[in-house]
Image 1 (cartoon, rainbow, N blue to C red):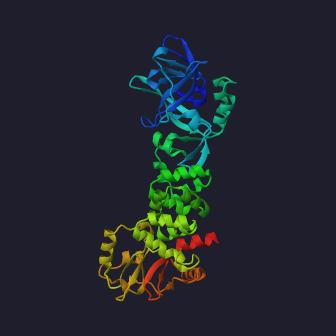
Image 2 (image 1 turned 45 degrees about the vertical axis):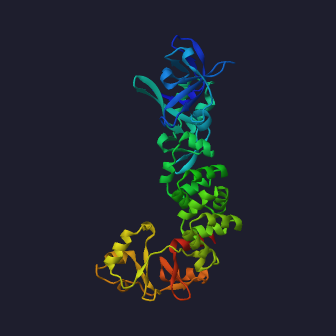
Image 3 (image 1 turned 120 degrees about the horizontal axis):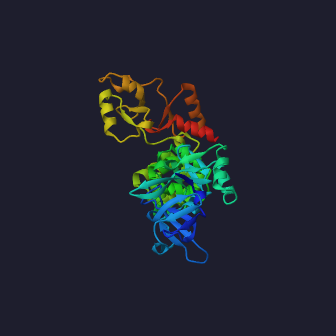
Length: 413
């Protein structure tokens, strides 16, 4: 049997002897025990202290009616419990994230399905209604009979989200922990999608989501967010948490973020970061943001120009590299000076014994760290580059500018 939360709210409750106990004022989910089962029902009657019925004390459900399998005396007195998720308070009318549709929606009603488990009847949340039918049920509840409401809603366009694709937006850190609401679904979203979702939320909600994500995912999301929102979020984070996130970011992205923060905050976060990562970011902060050095990333792959193709592949396999961003390899000559680049595609198609200098691309392009960003744009446009190497005064590679760096900078102009 299927029910809606609106049909259960305010339902009359009778005990095993048929005595009227009260009306349902709220019902709860206990996420730590079962993520979609209604575990408890809050029952109130006049001035009497509210009672709490467990799911295994309920015999039958029907629109407007709930019958117990125990007497009233078997019910416990209600005491607030933050580990319980209140459907009316925490779900109805609240904003949630539809992780499948990658958008923020508002809950109008909750769909419930009756199930028999170990001889007991339970109600399970199957989906949340975010469309017109749920809004109509809320509006007409108590005014029109449940049967009439159901007839009306069949004519309306349906819009619902399955419960497993729902992610609650909880801004209170303590409450997130107590409810044990997982954010695994959020972490499965593409960072750009999650960043777009967060832009529609309040500051507190954005803060709650970032605090709930692992550092790697949080770093990827912050890199996609508007700079203004990113600085707001990082300033409000615990410095240790913020530093952990910055550590996971590409050095150029971390430098861009820190450059937008007050100097005191920026220095505090750099002090919290490990020495090597902090030094890399400080080097980037020394460059003007509108130069090649200000755009570059200091994390890049470089090998000797005399290395054999098979040796390079074996070395790459042994390293913990971000393979999704590995597009081009920088070559060094015997003096550790820049001597060209090799695309990964060309590397994979080469013979095992071929030397890297035989595979390098022409022309041999590089740019100085203090070169203006417009010079970078012109080279990318003229030669259809995917990556450009930045060199110091001794022509030693100090970083690379990739096509996504160029696109991001152009979008911000």
